[in-house]
Image (cartoon, rainbow, N blue to C red; front, side):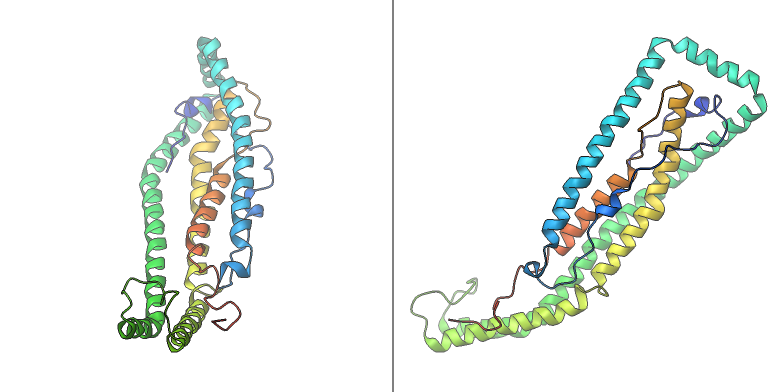
Length: 287
């Protein structure tokens, strides 16, 4: 979890004690995030291509916004460096002009600082838990798939023993394989396809555990991480700029860009575990 909180924000608030109103938000990056797939195989949809294209599109928007925000930040730095004494005097004058609101704002900023220190570890722990959960759900899927494939695997082991085929061989070979062995191999491949599809119905569909995990992850990003970073980072940053009389036109939070990118990358890792296509694409194996 990043910490981008400006230490000067408490003093900055003395110039503008009223509540912050961020610039109107541009359309969010979540609109570009494709819906999760429900097909068993990659070749049944174009989701991976769509997701990769969406990641690139959101990243490009993110880079552009970083440039805009960076220019505003540099302007604030230059303004302060040009005459830091004048900035300090302006803050002091603001305190003298409205000491009651200044005191209230100082107390509010101190309270927020303490709250940020308390909540930061909890946010970091939640991130770790969700990351561990993604690994756990994939291990559960792999175990379920292995169980579903067990009968076909046992059948393949029996064929290898009968034919004297090395145990690490991916198939029966190309030369000198009798027709009966080819027929058995094709039956094994068909068994694997049926087992995979049966397992898919429990895992890759919209009601499966992977979709459920991605919903929990998105809920965390939208309901917890993004608001946390906006509250304890973005608001202080904007107030700092306003203290220096630096225009903030064009500034926009990037926390939702980062969250959307993280969401799509996690989705890519999970749904990339789907098989590309059946062993028997036409429903039948063999020539």
